[in-house]
Length: 256
Picture (cartoon, rainbow, N blue to C red):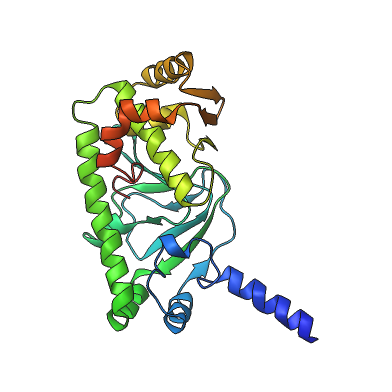
């Protein structure tokens, strides 16, 4: 192998690792020095792409690992005793899934892939051991756990006494903010989740969500073409749902 080939292989290897990942600033490597990132990288498994409907884990399954979305999106949901599905979270690249199971050792919900998705898998026992050796990793893990608690509080506030328009507006504002954090457009994006899944998450009827989208279009706040959303007046959406969104800034990650 010549020098150029060696360089290319090295670059590809770095790109596939935590060190070269474009999501590192949103994920576990935050605050880690290069050598510590290498240690973290050694316990991470990068799986081949999942497809819509694939399961990362199922409700009631024993907890052993967490997942980090690398591309695509995932929904978390639980089924009640009658088999009805209740969506509790939507996860985008850079976000961790499965933290809710640390307490009981069992997953209280299922995680299903919404579109072609790549995810990193981290054995929790290995992560726990490594975090005890690396204070900066332990701090970041605690920060992410704290964010889960914050999100739960935000969801209680959002679903309390807010109208359908406030809930849908807050949901769209949150997605806009999260896409922007990832270097993507804050004004135009695709919804990988269905209207029924959004309705389940927001505690609304599907018809109510559809009517709310239609009202927002009639008011010139957005354009919706199937799953494509184009926000035309983000200030007006903020007026409607800004207070809710500020309470639950990471709206989309309730319990998973």
